Every structure is written in C-alpha cells, then in structure tokens.
Amino acid sequence: MTPENFVSINNLSKSYTEGKNQLKVLSHTSLQIQAGQFIALLGRSGSGKSTLLNLIAGIDTPTEGSIRIGTRNLTELSETDRTLFRREHIGFIFQSFNLIPTLTVRENLLLPLELNPQHKANKQESVNQLLTQLKLSNRIDSFPDRLSGGEQQRIAIARALIHQPLLVLADEPTGNLDDNTSTIVVDLLEKMVRQAGHTMIVATHSKSMASNADRVLSIHEGHLVEIT
Image (cartoon, rainbow, N blue to C red; front, side, top):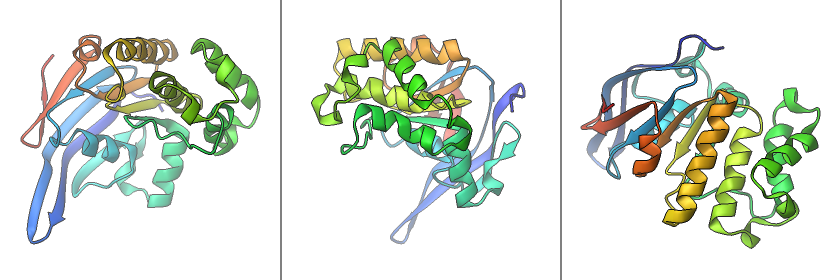
C-alpha cells in the first residue's frame, strides 16, 4: 500500500449545519501527498485543520469528494471498516494526549497492539524498545496523572507509532507544552517518523515544526494552499 501518491484528496468539501445555517469548512479542495512526506498544516483556529485530519483519519466523513489512502478509498468504506482501517494503518496524536487514565504506560501502549491481530507477537518487546528510545523505561508502570505534560505527549507519540502505521496524523501535538518541552517533542516526533519512513501530516502553530517539514500548507477560505 505505498503508491507514489500515498494520500489523495480530491474535490473535498465539508459542511456542518448550525441551526438554520450551513457552515462550509472545506470547499472543493484537493491534495496529493507522496509516501514518506512530512506535511505541516498551518491555519488560524477554526480554519479547518482538525476537520481535515479527522476526515483523513476516517473519524468523520466528507460532504463531497473522496479521500484515498494507498489503494483504499475511505469514503467508500462503512464506519466499521474505516475504524478497522484506522486501527491498522493510522497513528493519531492529539493535543490533549488522550491517554487512558486508568491504564499504566505499559497498558496504554499495549492497547493498539491488542486491537491489531497482526501485532500479537512480541508485544512487550515493542513496548520496551519504544520506551527505551523515549528514555521513559522507568515510567512503564506509572499512570498518566503521574507524568509531566512532556512525558504524557511522548507516551502519546509512542502509542501512535507502536503498531507501525503507514500514516501519522498529529493535531497540535505541542499545543499544551511549554517552548522547551515543545522543542524536545517536535525533534523526537520528526526523528522517529523519518527513521520509520512514515508519512506524516501535522496541524501546528509551531514555526520550528513547520520549518522542518517537506511541504507547508495552509487552509484559506476552505481551500488548501501550498506555502512551500
């Protein structure tokens, strides 16, 4: 599942109904992303960055248009099939970490592997290797509320990458972190994604993250505009 244009977005529109009004967030926009590219997505709050990531992840569905990842057209899949596809092929990193508070670090990282039948073997070894990379081996039995914000986000990155997804999506992954911690997390995320050869799309306000991207895009009046 690695054609040259790995993510293909064609004539994509998304509208929401608010009372009697129709709010159009994306309007007939298209984008082609090659396998292995790191894309930074800029735009003011409310411009549609999160909406676009949710559409690409199959969490939401478009009003018009299509989204193809590899050989699969997500807009033709049922909600169940989109969920299964996302579990197997997509890693999602959220601004708010979204770790399960009642599970330890170990259990949070094992969960994506438990949900993927093809990753049944060597689960604990995968967890140990990632935590060693993150320099968080000593936190393996800690609960999320015992971790700093930077540690929680590093665990969230590990959870998104542990099942070796083909596509990584990150929605303001440093939005809740201070500048110094943000720099550490940005460098770590980029290093791990590039080493693994993943394709990554990051919605961000971070200029340092955008400066390291292969391409920088912005959403303006519902359309994707390439900056560099």
